[in-house]
Length: 104
Ligand SMILES: [Zn+2]
Image 1 (tube, protein in one colour):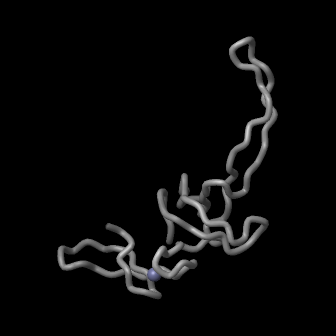
Image 2 (spheres, rainbow, N blue to C red):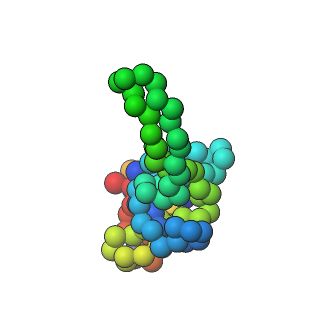
Image 3 (cartoon, protein in one colour):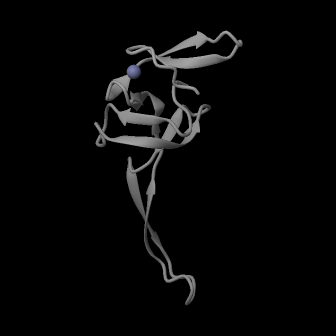
């Protein structure tokens, strides 16, 4: 996948289009990501006794990874990702727009 957990991404389609957030979880198998404050869902929780009063819980639902783009802090926008191999043999991601190495 082009994004992974901890990445800053921008949503490019859907109801949260334009939102920028951090990837909380990436599931490469399903090609889905969970992004901070994006696709917020609510769940009603039943009271489970005096210590757990219940109520409404908000949580992020997964979205398709193709709906997000890596957000480059330098470009201040969603960018395409390229790959390059460093002199020490590490394969890292780079911003295709400004050339910044994204994997430190
Ligand atoms: Zn960039």
